[in-house]
Length: 292
Image 1 (cartoon, one colour):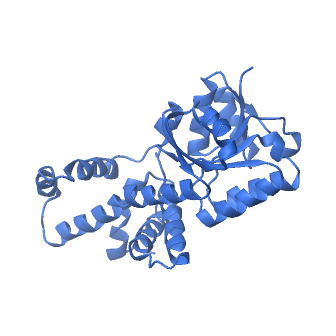
Image 2: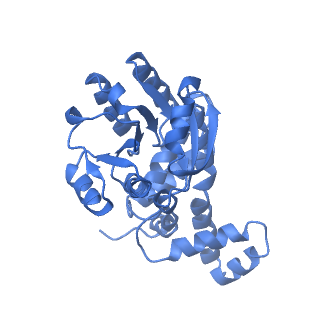
Image 3: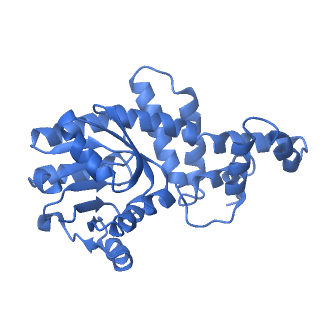
């Protein structure tokens, strides 16, 4: 029998995952708060729309790709309130949320008799569409085989990290590094501009150094014309706020993450839906605010 999977969220990652699963012989349903968005996606991807939670059939797994802690909490709390944790199958939270929220939701689902697994991924829309994500899984050991079976449908590699919230902490640690370079690049380009050094010289010399390939990659994405983003500026701002708050909650000063949260929050006020490396271009707003 073909596996039945519900994708919660029809944003960039949820829609890409639905397209991937539809090519794998999976019976895919999509649930989105704005049902018209789910209908548009499924008319293209060949999936089915779950119009509302009250009509929820049984699933092997539910993969949650919603924007933030509030959206994920609202969805899971609704499942628990309606007594639908069994129908959801193994609840795989792939959104990047705070470890503390994940701990709370794990307890809520477990007490309701459901199965909760952290399942954040590395990779973006291209990897999601091609079923080649890297998945980091954490939860109760009894859920491991079910979680890995579901994740194997869309992952090129899986890592079982341990218990909740270890996979979410790992994802935040990786994002803290992976999303940092545009902020550093923005300030570096400002230094060049301030003293009349051409960016071509910067790129040439950087190309001789160990980090040159990273500089070139992000310069190209920062200067490219706006198009379909791999990961949005707003998403990066949200992730850094989560990282900063999580560190502060554990007694660590969020010196770097707080600064990067401010950088991406500024950029999100100008270009919220654009690809996150393009935040480099928003940095100029600090020095030359737009006239009102």
